[in-house]
Image (cartoon, rainbow, N blue to C red):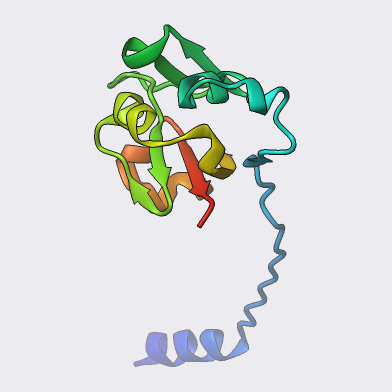
Length: 136
């Protein structure tokens, strides 16, 4: 009983203090509207358009083209990023998007790299996300 009284007395004298600080995480995404991409009027297709955006690497042409975001790589899978057009993830990748998107319809392209930006897309966004908005 004596130990319990001493313990309770000790707890009543204890003061706990805490402090916190917040820091806004920097965003590494980049939005490219059609007026910021060089020679956009000369782009033939989506593959050609993406190759003109800084931070995106495109190898090959046409349906055999492969796109990757510089600095993004996954050990467990290929390095192709998720393509999202007007909020809808494209399951066929670049080949499917290239055949459906006209360069003249592109309003903006946003490249998402950081885990905080790609978290919404889960594991599909582990290699980055290219968000394409089309003109209405």
